Length: 433
Image (cartoon, rainbow, N blue to C red; front, side, top):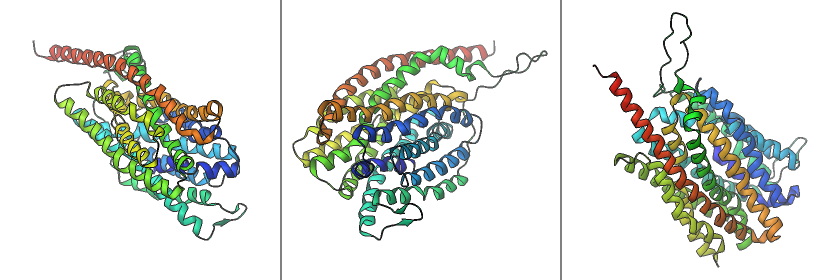
């Protein structure tokens, strides 16, 4: 539901631009910054709640909010009202990932967590694929059906009706979370026992955000930056490939939805599953840094396809390259939360993940699609050359991602080694003398 509500906008680029008279750069702000700004900033206080209260109820409330705001996107009367509705979608979805990743980390032990995180991460591509398939089919059906007429708003154009049909069913999905079990929190470090003066009562130092950032802040920033730089290219593909296929090959929304949606549903989800399997297999072989190794392998393999896909000379080659790129983009996709869950104590895990999303969302969703639009509008000055813009952004960002992932890998290893040494010391001190 979350990714359908988020991704449906990409399929409607040209109809929205034509009716609301906006540029590619303005559309990139709707697709990226409007969503990412509050999605990221609201994630931290909502994650604070997720570290303390029922995560399933928080997710249920978030689904309700983003579903209503998605429907309201179809009633926008201009750029700023659509911008405001997209902000609302971001606020609603801000609760999902920190709470969901925290739940998953408590449902599964560390050696099974890579696959579990990957399965959840498949939702990004399944949702994006379904958004394109369902959205494209809906636009085709709505175009040929009797128009929807609402009081005050009058007759709705097909793209507006699509938002209503996609958003409102989410209210029913929210109710399903009443059946979800809230698990016991794993790895909670107990609070210190109170002394006679009461001064020792309080949280264990490792339950604090201050302790985490004093001891592991540099590693966290490297990990967050590396995943964010990588993510800018796949997010740019999700936003701009539909427009590229429309402008370069004349494909209609229904055809784009079925084609690109199928690629995401099949190839991207297989890539995410493979990434989780690779990370868990390496972990069982004793490689505790497996999630970062998997990320580096996937990024290196994806780089040439990220650059060459929009430059192919015909539609057939473009779609073949797009399928390969989408598959390889999926490999690192489930790794960020798995990596952070290994270096963040349970008591701060949701907040650490939320801070990652604060930084990562602004870079990936806020800056990635915007860079493509800026190259199209101000460097190439031709909306038909959006494919070249995608290639340029990929050629810059993917090598930068490889460099930062490599640096993050070494820092990540040092943290895990220190954690093992600390645990060994605790075990020895607890042994009977």
